View 1 (cartoon, rainbow, N blue to C red):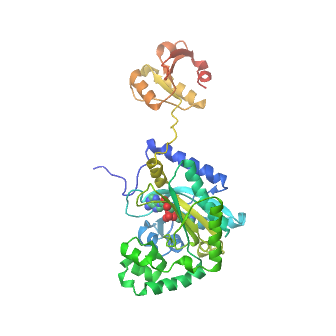
View 2 (cartoon, rainbow, N blue to C red; view 1 turned 45 degrees about the vertical axis):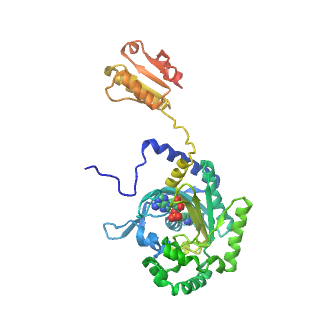
Length: 416
Ligand code: HAM
């Protein structure tokens, strides 16, 4: 029996890889423009990082992590997200000493043991940015603007921005008391997960997708009506920066996002093309996370975006992908006898900086031409006994089908 890929994972095949190069190229171009530097953290970390960083009672930590012991019994977890690892790296490498404000980005796979469905995978790729070291509301706006700039460059339309403030430690504590009071006599109507959430972290009830819980939460007191002065002013400034840039957004006072680290701003970007899994990006401010992970109090803000979902949305909107660049040159041999000369010539062409290949199977000249056509090369160099004896080869223009004999010594000049 054939062994298949694990559930929720997929191969990115050669015919699709150019889409990834294209998207990654645009991401890097835009993020460079905004002054972000790339960071690459390990694919796995000590489990504790995510438990402490994301929060014990979140869905990610309670249900979705791929966790396993190493040979000494230490618990490791495949990273489900990039923010906690980036903050760990920031602290471990004392990046705060290099500069007061650090702007980082990452691109790479994340792992969550969720139920796979369209647009939801167990291994998926994110690009994300994190600005560490400033509480300026302009940076909350900047991360949203940056995400939109990437989407704009890719030609993605039909996006909606949802934004909320989840307050700070101070105002959230008071709000949670209110929320608990509201939920107290409805506790029995909550699902079993939400009963646990009620005890451990009632704000997480907002994450529940179940109809019964959604109905209850609809009438719950709202965090935005319970913000302290500072959080209220911060939120107003973020919105004003977005207004200044003519960015249309909707306030969603029930948007809390499934991470405990958020403070103040939380946002999501939704694509009309994605069906149930419609969040194309999500992020927010996390002013306490650096301290929570052992550093000095350091404010921060960021977001991450799902690359598979970007590809789905681009395909759905029928945005054109750029043409793939084929090989420059194909080298064909008239006879198997000429294969060593063909191989030598192939390397000479490559060494001159052109992309080139040959067919290593023992096919006829005709079948080699078919390979050349498939590869979309502009020229084929045909190596045959008769021409070799004169130190020549045949150069075929694959579009016009014109052929001419050419001195091997002049070949590179002619091709370049
Ligand atoms: P998140 O909302 O969990 O946030 O993920 C960000 C994006 O990753 C989502 O909007 C979605 O596009 C994509 N994504 C998430 N889960 C899956 C999945 N199972 N399959 C496919 N795509 C998925 C975070 O990860 C935070 N670390 C964002 C952040 C950065 N907040 C502050 N800084």
